[in-house]
Image (cartoon, rainbow, N blue to C red; front, side, top):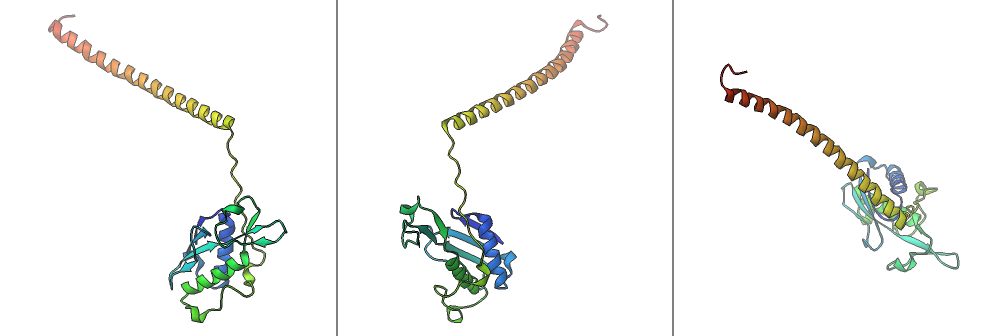
Length: 191
């Protein structure tokens, strides 16, 4: 199974979650490619009928001041500073629906994925946000630039040392030919 993660959530958690769903549905999970997008980058989840590729949209919920989790219907950029999580139950229902398509099922043959109890296989599974990368400080950037300069200087010095050794070898070979030419110019039998 190949998971292409285009979200702010951990790829290892997504892979574990999606693998559990595929196994529970009896799908040949090793052959699937699943692209996961954040809501807004893609509008709907979809899958090809009988084709082992699925495109999923990960819907987020944000913790509001009253302690309730809320999923906005539009852009979530206004809630970027709030704690967030994935609506795991809804994601599992939609995933089962889309995998059903890859197994050859049509809408008339499936139950509604928008409502109903969550699938049993998703109990206890979570999809955690990626850890934010620490922004480098100006001192960190300066240290990185200095390390780069010193590495490039060491590389140039190694090249110079090799070049000097190469010049010495070629000069020694050139001296051999200079001596030969000098001997030839003195004539035969000259010391």
